[in-house]
Each structure stands twice: as structure tokens, then as C-alpha cells.
Figure 1 (cartoon, rainbow, N blue to C red):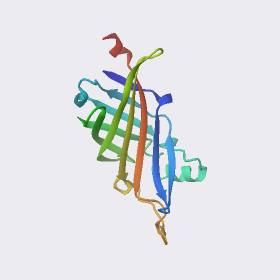
Figure 2: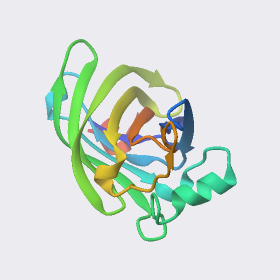
Figure 3: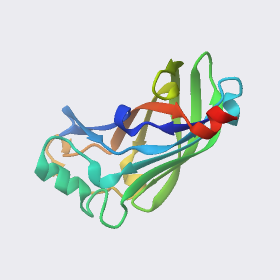
Figure 4: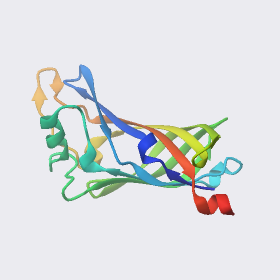
Length: 178
């Protein structure tokens, strides 16, 4: 079953520690992609998710501009953050581990994403709709996101980034017709 990510009902957020004291969160808009997923055969699934790097929004224009710059996402030269799955492993009722390749600013590294299938339901406008929650954490420096500033309590920005995605997807028309 092939599902199209519903951009207007999906969200992707990132969180990092600021001064190792507080958590700063930001979101991305325009998330798109395709999910091949059959609940009867989850291990045969496949995911391709694309995020517009320049869409980052933390609520602070100066910080957002810095995040889009070559110090971080380098959105002018690397307009998309891309995740492509390589393996799906069921881990219990409605829980999956999705291994795949995450590409940020031209660097691709393997990651494991914890995913929960929230459900599949009839949608009066789109046939069927599926919901997924996903979460992963990684060391941003492994993708070349190395900018930082030393401060007495450590560093200004933590190396650990936590990404959470709440994905809504609709069954694609070709799948409905089959």
C-alpha cells in the first residue's frame, strides 16, 4: 500500500539544548514523501521523507537565519533534508524501528528511527488515512553541523538533536484503484 504524506497535517520538529540548560524547539514546514506500508507486512515497508531545510522556524528570525546559513543547514546549497529507509523491523504491536539513511547538508549517515503506527482510518475526503509518530536523536556534528561557542557551563548549543515527526498520510489513488 502506498501512502502520500499529507503536508498540511504533518509536522517535523527539532529540539536542542541551549547553554545546556533549556531546550529550544523549531519546526519545519513542507514535509513531503511517500510511505510504502502494509500493516499485514510491516517489514516490507519503505519510507522516503523530504524536508525543506530553509523552512526551519524557531520563532526567532535571527536564529532561523543562522540555522539556514553555512554554519548549520547550508540551505542555499543543500535545500533538502532527506530520509530514505533501508529496513523496517516490527518491535511489538504498532511499534517499528525504521533504519535508513539521513542526508543533511550533503552528508549521508545511517540512523534508526522509532516509529509508532497511530492507526489507519477511513477518511471521507481521502479514502484512507494513516498516522505515524516517529522519534530519533543524533549527534549533529556527524553531519557537519559543527558550529558552536564555548561558554562557562559548556557550549552554547548541544551536539544532540532530537527530531520528532507526526506524519499523516493518505492512501494514494493508484493503491485505492488496485
